[in-house]
Length: 337
Image 1 (tube, rainbow, N blue to C red):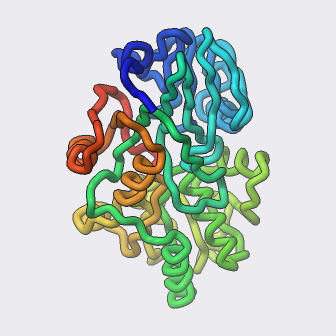
Image 2 (cartoon, helix red, strand yellow; image 1 turned 135 degrees about the vertical axis):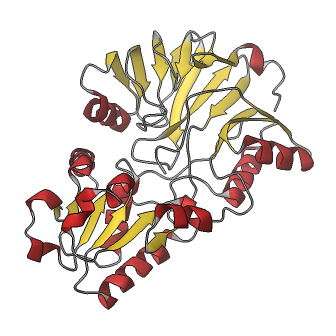
């Protein structure tokens, strides 16, 4: 495949990554006339665009998080379905990050670029698995692009959580997990491991979790923690925003076991900073080996790194004889982690 010249029609701007012949931005940081949104996290999906193209799930997530009028017009497309925008063939394929997440495949003048958004390669029962696409240019994230990041098997981490609950049947287990993707994944992993008791949620997590259920993700008996009696919460599994685990919301639970589900729990300093008793290394982003393997699998001649630890990934890819460079895109963080 040939990557030469793709940067003449796909390139970064102050508003975001722009596909010129289609007149469309991908996950723009500022309001634009036309945007393609890879997934619903707030560093990728922002309000104010004239028109938004995304999967149906991402559109519903944006409406819940940002409001029904978050865009002038929403357009949905099914995964794998190709459409022409200004002569550019565009299709969305699964990214494996959260429900509705997608990579953007762009084909123009015999060249193909894939903008992956955020992605992971390990199994996740709450979203479609990542689909590798051969391409000339692959635009990758780099959230965990350091060799130290090698995520644990998520089911094993949930096993640790449930084992702690069995050892401490009188103590509520408070799990800090981000509201879109991580919360629902933790719930489903617990269900798949045989945990069938009610799971209680912080109010901030209710709306998106109910949306997941409406969109067909089976999560079992979910209840608002605010409505529970103290006796109901003894020994219960409770999930809330990471920030809530350290604030006064958590004080209603006597002697809880605190946990945090995140890829950052691989780093001892982050564990100490979070102050949790039970760190759970569960990530919705690719780890170091997955990033390298995915990039090689695409066969891309040129790799563009959008955010995160881009210097380490660019160095490693260059060392392997690949062409790689960091893109100067702003506005991305790890909201989903």
